[in-house]
Image 1 (cartoon, rainbow, N blue to C red):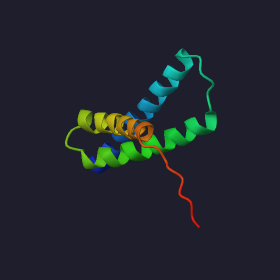
Image 2 (cartoon, rainbow, N blue to C red):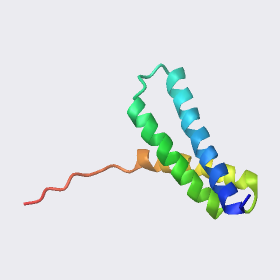
Image 3 (cartoon, rainbow, N blue to C red):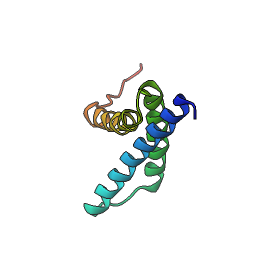
Image 4 (cartoon, helix red, strand yellow):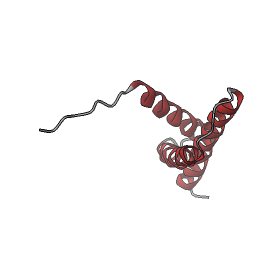
Amino acid sequence: MDPLVTGAVLGGAGGLLRAIVGLGKSIAAKRRIRWQYFLVTVVIAVLIGSILGILTSVSRPIAFLAGYSGTDILESLGKIIKVVPIDIK
């Protein structure tokens, strides 16, 4: 199999695993699951993981971990960054 395809698949799998771990944390905390949000998160996680897997397709474990950690980093950034409304006059 082409190394880029392998990197994309493994990175996507890492992103998918990260989304499933987040779902498990929400279930354990007995939070209400927003399924639409979860599905969007899974799609984005797989896309980001695939891209990072391609970029780091040096070895299979690195591609997988890049997909997992890349999604985790973006999720953390989303919690830090606050959107400020802009008034247009």
